[in-house]
Length: 269
Image (cartoon, rainbow, N blue to C red; front, side, top):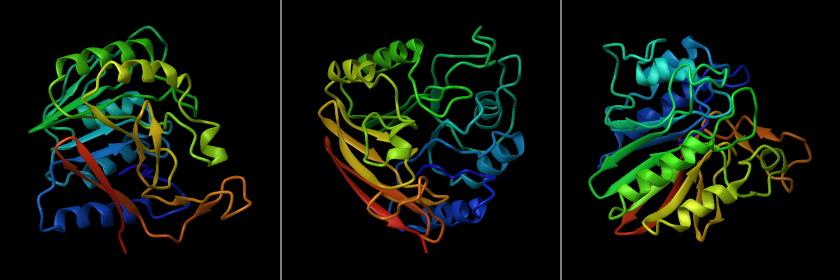
């Protein structure tokens, strides 16, 4: 799932997110994990993250990465329970439990207070790697040098396991002008890493607020729909930011069979 935007003024972000997580919890079949590809909070406030943390606690292994609306410092405090000194506070729910935090940390010298939030979730027969493509204060995405190096190292370590690599910003154009203008910058840097690691079976993203699929680095690029709303294509609307607030929240359901991934999209009504 992606783009829950807790605190968004134009939609019932809490109600829509709760509807999706309750639906996931009610499914009779087994789910291995929940992956959330960014834009958790709309304004990056501590209150929005605490609400999001509660809503996303489904009891399943869950891995979450920031998006362009997120604030790294507040994100880390809420989801990783990190204190301002880089330590970890006690307590909290299970969101993010079982994931390993990668490179980047407090006071990293760049002026944003915190480095990229890169994480790994290791499951039985599958590794999920989420990279932080957010750029503090900017809407477009970029994978910092330390993230690229960290990703290469993680993929080398998990070379024998099917792997999904995800981030907030799509690495390829989707035919949605507003989103394509603020997509991932210099995607060729990511492509070079992926081509060295054949166990990566697909790339996951969000940001576009619409379910989409294309190709990147000769792999499927699978974009999760937005929970908070749906962005329309130019053929569907002439507005610069054509958002449909009436369509119900959606999520993607991925089914892995060996190294073959099949993706289904579901609306929650």
